[in-house]
Amino acid sequence: MIRVVLALLFLSTPAWAMQDPREALANPAQEQRAQALFHDLRCVVCQNQTIAESDAAIARDMRKLVRDRIESGATDTDIVNELHRNYGDFVLMTPPFDPRTWILWGMPLLILGVGGFVAVRSLSRASNMDDPS
Image (tube, rainbow, N blue to C red; front, side, top):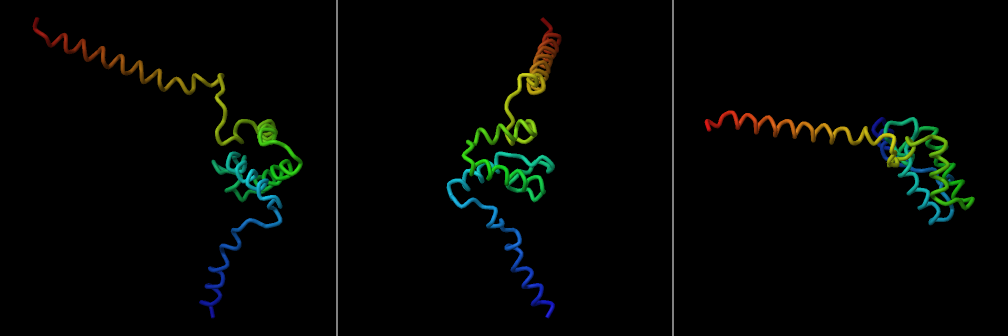
């Protein structure tokens, strides 16, 4: 008997993981737009999960907001801008380049360049000292 119960639980698990059909938009093109946006937006409480992947309540609310905005005729840019305004750069899976943080991104290259210059210069000095002429 326990095997039958376990088998039924095991076989019904994929049904639990499926999206609630009441959440999906009736128009397939709109639902496809929503799904694309879900993969471009990060859940604000999860570690690097999109709102498509997250089961958090805030992710469900964000998915509902995206679907509501699509139904009301908003463009993808309008929706992303609204969420960006509310949650900041963190909500975007690919945040925009910010000139205020260029040093953060450029510093490793600068350090690597200076280190390479120092290494080449010290190696050339060492080889010049080894020459008897």
